[in-house]
Image (cartoon, rainbow, N blue to C red; front, side, top):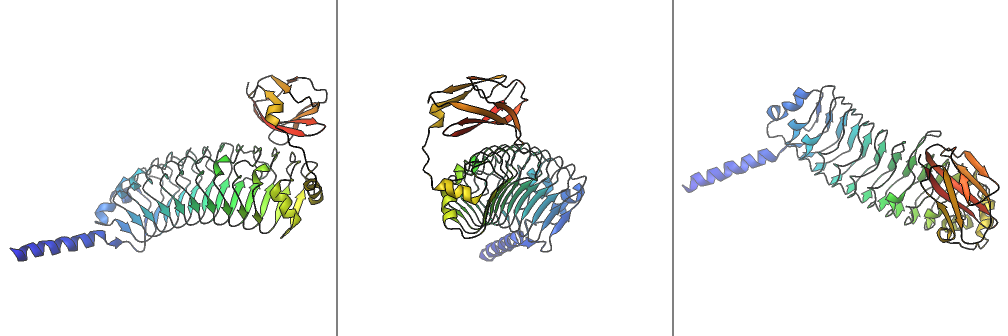
Length: 404
């Protein structure tokens, strides 16, 4: 009896070892729904795929056949699937040894199915998924060892779904679009190992108005680039950023009127570029002034508004003590959003000499040189604008939303 019991235990142990063994060291590629459906039959007890997994094909509609897979040793690529609407069959995967790419899946509406993944050793790239509106499904990922790249997802409005993410080992690359309005979801990211890029090609419109989703970010190991964000008003959201390992570039942001959000940067190792921001006249924030006092690389400041058109202009402004005003308590611009009429309330007694309104391309669409308490904006189309008030002492800029 004891021998029989021992044999049963040994048999059970051997079975358990076989069941947990890795499989497919050379990886596997799925191009048809039939191949996915027959996976468990073709590869019995295969739960830990050692190599890469490629999934692409015109008739793949679901991944339920892969529900036994718990880990992938190398890359997982889900790409160019014209009929795939869900990846819920991947619910049991807890580890991906390489990168994860989800790209150009024209019918994919959700990333639900990846909820058990905690970390990705390589890159995470979400590219060209035309119906994807958020990143829910990546909820438990805390670290990305490589780059985190998001671009060409035409309906993606925010980063909702990656709230657990705290560290990115490589780049955070966000190629903007006219629907991405917020970086909410990235609020727990504290460090980016390499570069931060937020922007799009010059001449393209983008909807991103704020960077507040990055308010816990403290360090960027490489370059920080904000390029051609046509709706970005200011840099609030980068207030806790203290270190940039390479170059800071702020270029071609048409209605950017304040860079106060980067005041707390203590270290910019190499170059400083502030250029082609037509409404940016005040660049003498603490971090910029400190860098100009002791530059460690090249300085390129030009083609901004007067006051920030050269390094010499900014250096001069850095030496001047400017009286501080509480703009919100002294001046009111209402209603906002507005339809046809805009009212100006001035409690300070400071005369408003001129009012300009600019569209998202940085074009002046309204000018008032005789300023009363009422401005007619009935000629303006729906959209986001910047209103600029000139006084003898200060220039006030605020975002204006027109909704009719």
